[in-house]
Image (tube, rainbow, N blue to C red; front, side):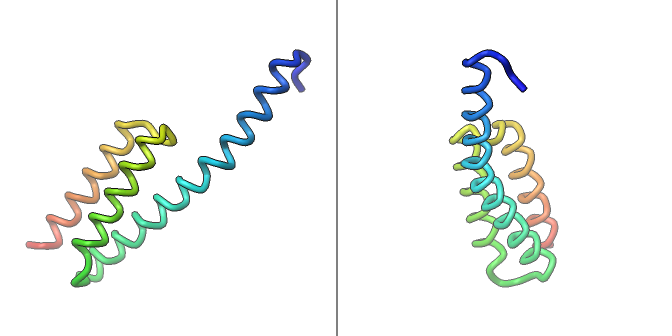
Length: 87
């Protein structure tokens, strides 16, 4: 346990931010899973699902919840999967 008052406050702030950020991470993961499922099932709405997932990934990165390069990597993998399914 921290001894300094500032350290104790930092612990509370980190806990609050973790709760706040977990909402966005969960939402992003859900949309990614839906997009991957649509790609695997060769669903007609897979293009829209991927576009929606990409938008959520961008918003999550813009809020600083995930790193920009992490967002780019996830978007790239979704785009590759989508392009491979359209062949």
